[in-house]
Amino acid sequence: MRLQLKKHWRIWLLVLFMLVSTVALFAPLGGSGGITGPGADQQADSQYTNLQFGLELSGGTQVRAPFVGMTVSGIDFGPEAEPEIESTLQEELGVSASDVRASAESGTVEVFEDQYVGNTTRAEFAAALTEAGYETGEGDVDMGVTADTREGAEDVLNERLRERGLGGGSATQVSAPGQQFMVVEVPGANRSEVIDLIGDRGQVEVWAMYPTDNGSYETQSLLSQDDLAEIGGARQEQGETFVPIRLNEDAGARFGDSMRENGFDQQGGTRCSYDLNASLEENTADDPGRCLLTVLDGEVVFAAGVAPNLASSFESGAFDENPSYRTTTTSFEDARELEINMRAGALRTQLDIDNRGTTFFLLPSLAERFKPLSLVTGAAAVFAVAFTVFLRYRKPEVAAPMLLTAAAEVYFLLGFAAAVSLPLDLSHIAGFIAVIGTGIDDLVIIADEVMQRGDVRTSRVFESRFRKAFWVIGAAAATTIVAMSPLAVLSLGDLQGFAIITIVGVLIGVLITRPAYGDILRVLVLGDD
Image (cartoon, rainbow, N blue to C red; front, side, top):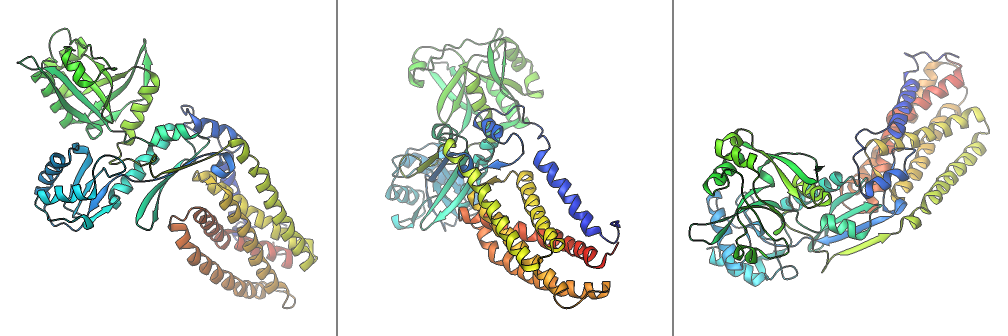
């Protein structure tokens, strides 16, 4: 029998999605050549497909930790008061500018220290805010940070995971009574690798150190991540490791002016003998020369003078027109870490992993055992359903298309998981099994409605019965989606993965596989070609 494109377009749509799923599962992914680190190992585990696996099926590390900080909400002040509030809190609490944030838009003031990390208590925060002119009691201070800060931290951490090439890694906010946590899961990585990546704020700055007229040394912060327009990849050329960067127009002009004002434009470049093993104060006492310092989270990680060609560009003003230079480091690993932090941006606050955080590590060798067990569980579900269906109809021509259609549904789900880089865990496997059950159930409803109410002799009778069955299926699908939606949206751990797979499976069934099965059943019952 021939399948006409116009009459049996639902079957052809099924075939088309089979092809799309095949491409998503097996087509080579571009841009993976530069991936290094644990993510490369995890990709090697799935070298035959593009599927990614989560912690429970590939091993790895989970870190759960609260945010460091305290917040006072409901304060009424304008944007012009923000700098004054921040300046007063810095002075009263002895913290840096990056540890305080006042937002007139949300009416909140945050300090990114607390009694666990840093030396700031609720009482001290309240007293400092009162000193700034806003009467505050200790009871007005909440532990934790604002939603805006949490969302920014989630974005930065996910960007770091992507930049490091950690396939399947994710950072997600989780709310608990009275506290907010960040849960970071990285398949295939050990604890130290994950802590090194997420444990610091990743705040990159460029400082200038130079002598003043009275012989003392002054240090000035010139650049931060916000001043970078373009960031190149970490490189190693002629024994030098560096990250090429380009500043935005305003930062370039400001940087060039500072270089000229403080003597970095002298002919022949500048000398720098900064000792990374000594403190900033010790270096200033040893006459280190004029240095540009690369600072990561307040720690100087590299120091260098200005090369003659760069000094000439400062002097001539050419740097202002093309504000590009190289940030050098002592090793390629340091350059790569610097690049990741520059690209991802800095965390406003850090995670308290040491005091209140928890870590979980599952050995990859142990996790690998779950894969065949999951496969066996899925196969057992399929065979159990197949046996039940054959007992029900005792007609291979009716039951076989049911099983093939259900199998196609699972194949589409696997293609979806590969296309969106969804790391599969045991909760997702449970979702697959649920989709198989609900899918067969719907197909049984269609077959019973069409075949158990007398002979089907015309297309009109078939269509009438099929529509009745499809209305029942559609109503059941809508109920399932509504029931599962809160689980899919809320951060409820494993339940979220189960809900996502179930919802996507139900949508695929209602929109693609159920209508296609109807066309297949029409051909089998009516011989309709």
